[in-house]
Length: 189
Image 1 (tube, helix red, strand yellow):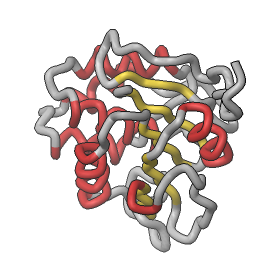
Image 2 (cartoon, helix red, strand yellow):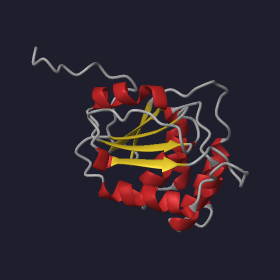
Image 3 (cartoon, one colour):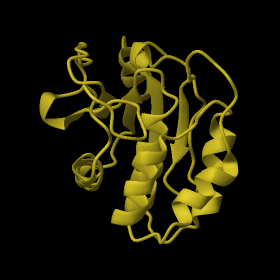
Image 4 (cartoon, helix red, strand yellow):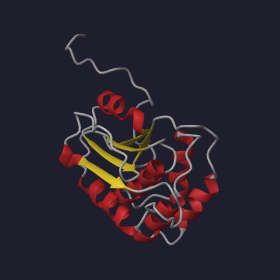
């Protein structure tokens, strides 16, 4: 089950249950508290306090190298027996950027343009955070190729909040629809 599920904050509980997820990355502003879904253990939840900004701003936390390093380290420890949920407030900027970084960290032999195109195909609304992308590009040694690939897909369609989507780590990975049928937890056929 090597795929990522990207969503907004108000979808995390439903998403974790629908997909059987057991691990999650949260990219939220410091102090924005929320309840972690019960199916996600505290030790398998990476919570990063970071604002959705692309430069330094007083009173806010800009994405930094340490945030991206922690995303990569967590992704590398993901056991892949269930999908990995990645979310932010609206599911438009920080979490799609983290999904791209995760996919390249775990499958580094793929082309950045193809990966960015798959992201755009999965969601017309995403506009990955440019600072997270630039830092990820540098750490992963992509020599500007990830930055340019994200620039080529352009800004996402206007929306007030993103919609849940799935992204395979590689092209051709089998991924379920954005809203699968509910799992039967009562054991009924």
